[in-house]
Image 1 (cartoon, rainbow, N blue to C red):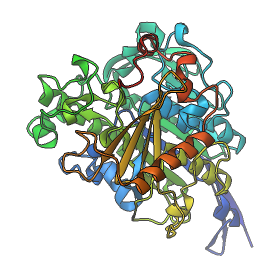
Image 2: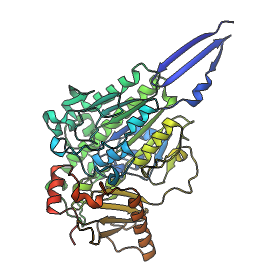
Image 3: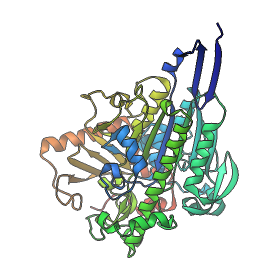
Image 4: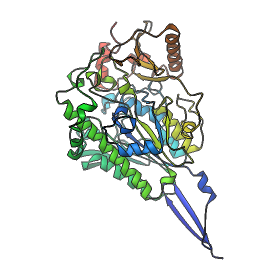
Length: 499
């Protein structure tokens, strides 16, 4: 008898084929392999701007395919609807009041406070679990993205100090990157460049599984420079998606956060950026399938937070208003997961409250074979939901924060609580009835006392457990500012809402 052994090692998939008398038997180890994991994250990509979430005029066929064939989370949230805090929460598994990043980080030495120096990053955990770990695109969870962070075997982010922070957001043209700490300039459509580099990482010879964090800057501003072939799709229908007009009780932060005169064009550019991302999602799916590793790879698409593109007459996210808002369009995000049946049950819609911190715990669980929760943060592994289990003990409240402002919602009522610099002063509470036909245009009267007290109690318990004195949003005035605007706000004490 002749037995031939052929071994293929690529991207964590290790196939061992024994051939004897035309019989092929798979190694029993295949049932216990760690999956390859790819997380693609958009920047300012709101839930409403995805076809699978009801955006019928938004063309996202590849994200929609992941949602149709995999698991779509219909109530996914950002724990902190600003880029740096939300990304720091994803990589640490903690709330901003634990890790200390409360606003977007200015990428200059003036605002370098050794952010996340005391934290263990998801990348470090995964490296310790035997993964090759690569980041491609936006990082922005510490001050200087040009410096490779702990736990990453491959690093392709931005050299923001070379030409100013706006350079990294160019959708086309010459963008200054940092590849493993070395400056690299690329001219072209940067979303395609990031995707190509991520696929090259898949192809690096290794018998380890891989984790890829692929972070696009789309559809973040500037709302120009997107491929005309994509922008042209949306000019005629943009006003049917979000028409100009509208207002709310919260004051805007100036003309840059109000709906512009060329709203139709800017919205068309934003949606074109969404479609550009979707094309990259399709390229990644094709690359994984073409390498015959789709049956050992989990693919995730999500976003750091939502975005207002004319809703309530505003452009921006939580900091489009002062005080910051927690509108549904700002805090709700897409989150879809696709993978083989031994890790998730396909064709599911899950309505439980989930967020990026849960995604952190889920990735940890998938990598280590554990469903244990992260004891340091509030995240819960989504593995039971992915497996199709009927959930009876999932949380019934969702929380978020930004600086001295905090949010809690049970899906019907939303409480936004704003603390003041005087620790002895009563916080300012604003309530929103999400069932009201005007949405969150106006704050409402509180719910009946039993519901009011329950939501307040749950919020206080949650943040008491998941905050530290050094980083709590309640003590934001004594912490280092993340950027010049935040420093100015702190000096003027305008972070709390006026009485």
